[in-house]
Amino acid sequence: MTVQHQLRGTGVALVTPFAKDGSVDFTALGKVIDHVIKGGIDYLITLGTTGETPTLSKEEKIAIIEFTFSHTADRVPIIVGVGGNNTAEVISDLQNLPLAKALAILSVSPFYNKPSQEGLYQHYKTIAAASPKPVILYNVPGRTGQNMSAATTIRLAKDCPNVVGIKEASGDMAQCMHILRDAPPSFVVISGDDLLALPQIACGMQGVISVAANAYPFEFSNMVRACLAGDFVNAKVMNDPLIELYAIMFAENNPSGVKAFMHQMGLLENEVRLPEVPLSEPVYSRVKTYFSIS
Image 1 (tube, helix red, strand yellow):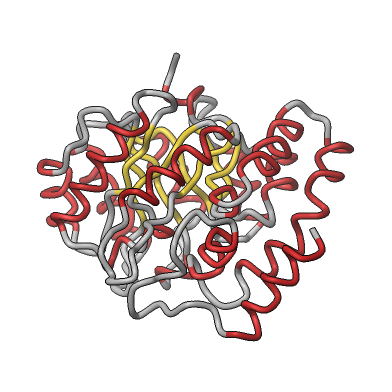
Image 2: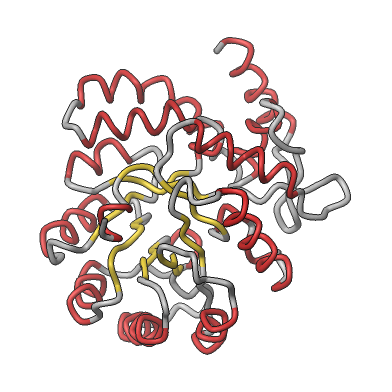
């Protein structure tokens, strides 16, 4: 089975559970992994943005990767987030992190630096040449401060054999359609927006890397499967109740929103690391209300 085929469907950008003392809660991480796999997701992403990766030490990152592979026990493929705004450091991580069992790496665009389109191209071209695993680009300008244009994405897709796809989270439907029109047939375009997953799959995306599926893997993955089967009537029926969930979940920040839902489910403590903070009480009360009426 090709990497591209395995990226079809629902991936989950795993949260990193923390104990009340701030340490990584591996017991809870195991519960979350079991929860999403039982819920029917297709693959996992560890050390993505939702995992609060910028706040993790290198030792914690290695321990999380090793635990995730061990606990998952080959039940689903695993992608490891390896990105940053220092190209040389990303190359070092590719050489030193335990990636042997990874299906691919997910590499976020450089943040804060705001490189030009040529800078983005050279950054990813360098990573692709050094990576021991296939590379999935990750464009999320709301977090990085710089959009990667459709033209740059297509250029990378055509020039770098090791670049197999993109998690596209610009929220720009016109940009998404340009990528889908011009990308090579083997290039996988994955939604990075839970709210837009349905219309983006309708345009031709092959799935989504989801935040919400940490909490609601069954509901979300079934909606994505219906979309991929072309059954958009039933997909809409499944997605409509989730729209309010998305609104609450992303009202303040990620992953504080999804962690609040997961805490209500008994999956983890309601803990995040600074500079993130838990949801404010007014928004958290909406989470509690959602559970009381759902």
